Every structure is written in structure tokens, then in C-alpha cells.
Length: 299
Image (cartoon, rainbow, N blue to C red; front, top):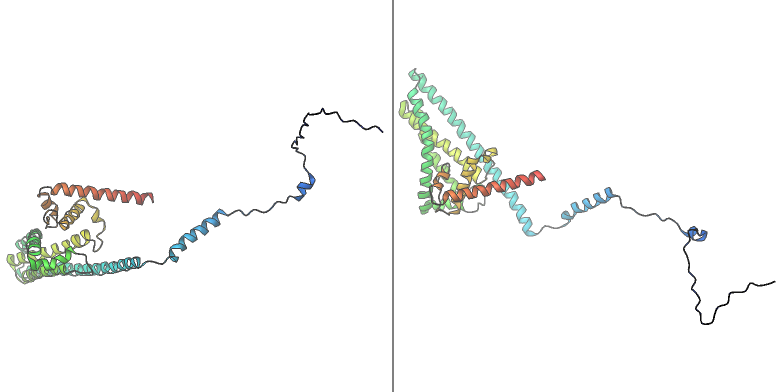
């Protein structure tokens, strides 16, 4: 038997290394040893619910600090104070308005039945003094607010509670509302029992003071100082102007001006620089409201 001879290799020549070329032919032994292992794939719905649950439970697990507890307690206290004052304001308004309406009806009905003629002069005098009393109270409030409540030391001792942080549903300054009700009730009572024009004048003046007091409480305590909600009337431009003007009074930037309420913007505009300051703060208020509305709309 003859063996095949290998090709001769020259001395000193290097042998070429054997190159392993990849093959596409499957190797049965290697494939048999491979096994497909199950892969744990996270369910996106379960993962989302789990992460949301963790986020919801996280704040509950964190203990509130002493400062945060104090803020929560103060927030609850303010809500109770606002509810108390709101109930008192509504009850007083309903009571006073009911008495005023009944008293007005029976006064004219009583005197009309006695004389037999329609008391036109008394009715005109009463109506004129109702509006005159309201306007006069605005002027009186401007005077009393400055001279008696700010410049007069005993008056300021009560009124300064209104310029300080309130610690309860009421403040010492509320005494002035009760004090102003005394002459109003006295005039209404005298005019109710007194016939003719004199009685009509006194009754109308007392009724005008009463209506001014109710309106003042609604605008001053509700609109300006937010002691109770006033509804959509707060969105009226003129109401916002009254609000901003009274806020300027609390800054004491123009010596306390304006001291009036309903004509406060006009009083402030008469002071040098007052109109510009009022317009600037009005623009800032409208910009903040527009920004808040945009955020609420996007949410």
C-alpha cells in the first residue's frame, strides 16, 4: 500500500496558519444543549398602578413636621372663623332688612289710613333722605375714618385691630358697626311714629344709614378683606377698583388715603401719584387673574 506523500516544505519557510471559516451548518450537539428560558416582562398597567400606589402612599408614611401641623391647625381655625362671621353677617342682614321692609310698609299704610290721602310729600321726603343718607354716610365715613379712628388716639385704640392680623372671627373695630347702628335705629323709630314730612325725613335718614351699613359690610368685610364670599360681583371692574383703593389705604402710602369706601378711588385719584399707583396695581391684579385662569384652563 502506498502512502500519499506530503508536499515538501522548504527549510526556513513559515507554515500558513489554519483559518477557521464560519459555517451555517447547525451542530446537533450544541443545539441540543440550548434551552429557551422564560423572560419576565413587566406589565405596563401593573407597573403603572404599582408606581402610582407607591407615590400615593409615600406622603402618608411621611410624618408631618410641627410647623406643618401648626399650619393645618391654623387653616382649620380660619375656616371656622370665616363660617362664624359669615353666619353672623347673613343673620344680621336678614334681620335688619326684614325689619326695614316691614317698618316701611306699615309706616305708610298707617299714616295713609289715618289721613285718607296718599302722603306724596312724605314718600318723596323719605326716598330723598334714603339716598341722601347713604351719600352722607360715605362722607361721614371718610371724615370719621381719618379724624376719629386714625388721628384720635382713643378711636385708634379700637380701629388699630383692623390694621393688625386678626386672631378670631371678630375684632374690636366691629364695635363701630354697632355704634353706627344706634342713631340709625333712633331715627327710624322716631320717624315711624311721627307723621307728616318731619317723620318721613327722619325715617328716610335712618333707613339710608341702615342700607349704607349693610352695603359697607358687604363690600368692606366681604369683597376687600375676604371675611366671607361675595360671589361674581367681585369680578366687576369697578368693584376691583374699590378693592385695590382700600388695599392702598392699608399700605399708608399716601398718608392713609383713601379713607372712604365707595368713593375711595375718586379720593385717591385726587392725590398726586394716586391715579398712577391705582392703575399700576389694577394692571398687576388683572395680570395675576389672567395667569391663574390660563393655568386652570391648561390643567
